[in-house]
Image 1 (tube, rainbow, N blue to C red):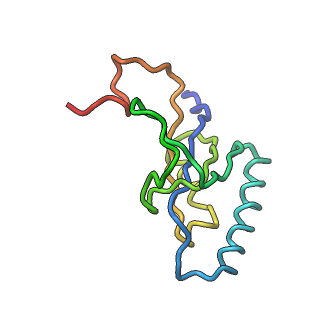
Image 2 (cartoon, rainbow, N blue to C red):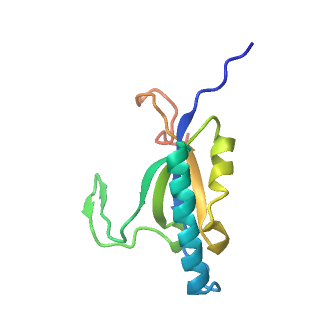
Length: 130
């Protein structure tokens, strides 16, 4: 008998901008549906709170602090984030696919949250390509 996979946290990044061919009324209706959907998922424990992001920002690197953007192309803009609690990346993606805002131009990047401590000896997102 196999054990069920325990739930994990998946970060969802909301990317993109509203479809320019959609009416403001349709987009506003989708936003309303989103908040209803989001609230139901929070209550069910399928999601953890997230937030929209402000348009202000700063970039910090070894070159210093940069506070005047823009920092990315419109298609790369991150408008907000939240966390889905699921048993697999596929299951998390299926939850995100139900987002009522998706038909209006937004896309969602889903990434498992890594609980292991970082190490310079492990191959990770930060490891340079050979």
